[in-house]
View 1 (spheres, rainbow, N blue to C red):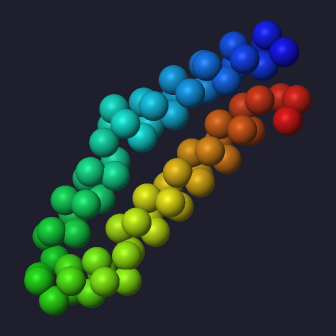
View 2 (tube, rainbow, N blue to C red):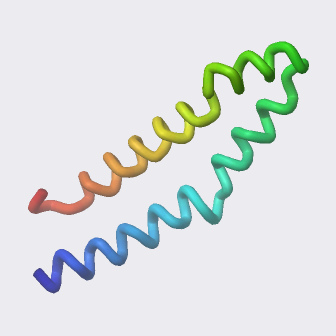
Length: 71
């Protein structure tokens, strides 16, 4: 159990670097602003930036969980 907790703390550090420190979701939001107003409004209406953030979080979670050998 202690090894699992140590690994989760280590893997959380990896996730924090990937999602928070690199500010990937902020960069995705800024790239939406580069489109013209009609395209940007349509992307926001269909919540495409939120979907991309969820997909990115899912890929990072999958990567981190594969690093734990006994799961």
